[in-house]
Image 1 (cartoon, rainbow, N blue to C red):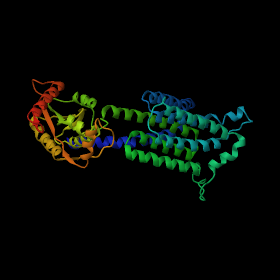
Image 2: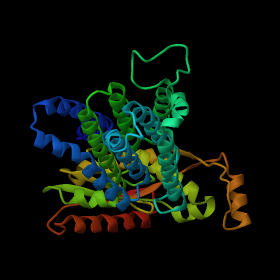
Image 3: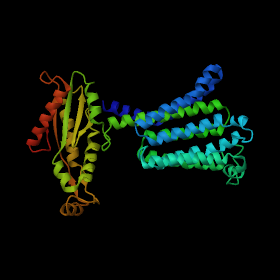
Image 4: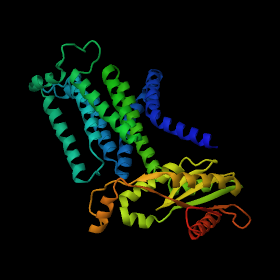
Length: 418
């Protein structure tokens, strides 16, 4: 059972990493198939990116995800510029707009904005920071419009000018400056992904790679349409993935949250055991050492119980309480694994750290500072119950386990009660 859970977790984590790139591979395959489609179908495909961008913008707004929203805006502006600006030359011959000039500006603006957005923390859309980003995008539109004027050809040539003695013209349509910014943005996003391990940064990495590919190829306008559309889908998917993770995973401990517990309790079969686990004297611990240290203690306990044996699955119930489900098990099956878990926690030393900050009183701050570096041991009390004729529903079994937990407390703590 433990191996199955580990396998599922591994598959889920790997899928989270490769899913955006699978979307891009599908985009390439779909683009190859567009040559067989009728004109009416191609017209629908050409409009699809803007529909996806609009839907993505609404979802981003709803979930307050400014990085995705502003990236979608940049992609929409870039695609519209490449599709429609060259056609304005026919309407205004005095203001010619070359497709190569648009390509040069877009090749610079896309990685620059994705790289910039990766540096900014999520601080809302209609906040001061959000308005600053809107102003940044608007200023870029003005600068791009100014660069596209015929008399500014000298400034525009600086973007495409080779900075290194080696020319890349025969290799790629992207200028050396743009290639450099693409690389910098990729390094920033990869660093963030290694540090935070979110689906959001993986999605941005995939979008960045897709944008470089189409700008590098710079061939068929339909390639731009397909890859821009799929890039929008990847960003929307990352919002859904992160929102799901926030809803069903406890942010502090990384364990499944109470909402995930409720869902999994609905899937329990005929036989199962529910265990409730509580950290002993946790309120006193918080009062003595501070809530930051208390959070570290919760993380320590969570790191131990997530590897509970016997086919159990652990959850953060709330506060200092945790829940463990043992599907298809009896009390006799689960008891030795819970005893082993209790002993592992009791024998695991916890090193106190010197936490800066203002405590509730000078004496408490003095206690925290004087205890820095000291090793203490945390204990837990555990109550468990099994489905029976008396307790037929999961909620009733959990209540029985909670009653057993209080019995464990009364027995002196650091024990398992049934």
